[in-house]
Picture (cartoon, rainbow, N blue to C red):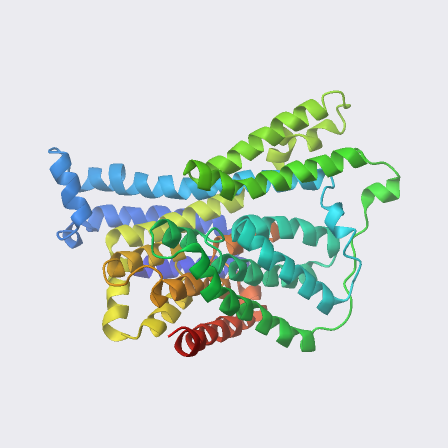
Length: 444
């Protein structure tokens, strides 16, 4: 299974030289991993607590039905939550964009200087990510970048910094990243403590790359031409633009509030926001002519949503889920505990690994191992939130934000590795060192 996973991962990384779409590779990889697991996994699960509980509950249960009816469905449910959240967020952002709602922000950003623009967008992303979450924020910021930067390679580079800033911003907020949400809901961290202990390291992980890039980047960006301004025709009025922007952004901001109040999963809050916006746009544009109506309603917008990216997400997460069910990730966590030992270093390694394997099962494994060992607000949990959140920026498919940006902008894995990974890695280590120094000299 490990060999197949490495080969599949290599094929995804080499998408452009092989000329095979990464979504196709990811789907094949996912199916192959589960086929290997169901044919050869029974012998390694003799000591699996989950498997034995299933057998006790269902007297006619066997290994094959446990894999297909228990493990696969459980993982598919968790992955579907992310996919529906992603679909909802992408549709809302696309709808606001089709109404030119983001002009409220882009018209206020007048600079074309690369360095100034990079700082403005990165800081905006950092704080937005803490209020929304890193996935939603990256989708919003890519929509903004398309209005601000015409050149594709320039936009890719800025998108790389958006990934770093979004993951850094999500790491210090209890609602900013899936892993911090897990730790917060699991009772391992409290709100004020996680903010106080990790906001500075998270900011360092973004600011250090920005400082280096400020000396290396030169010149200005070219703004894209506005087709509507050129033709003198605009399908939306000023009121419609501002109204849809307010409702769209408001519905995104309400997702964490919805979750806190109802204790229901965030994707339901996102779907509620989409439903509200759908009804509003249908009523708002019912009298519009048929030429403009499709691009201003949810039905037309859904046709533009990037389905291959969603399928890529499904494939890569299902492949990692197979490793988790087979016990590979728990073995990895045990090995780290045995051979590394130092808690700070264990977290640093988990962060680096989260750029290769999804950070959710890694954090889940660490939570399972250390749940009864460390109390609430122990430094292990706080540093785990920082490392698992920011470490995913090292590779473009290491975080939900990275995968979404990769799909939306069609960024090449190898290009990101050459141009952005080094800055993400420098920032990651700088933030880790900052957390260690603060914890040792300020908080102990």
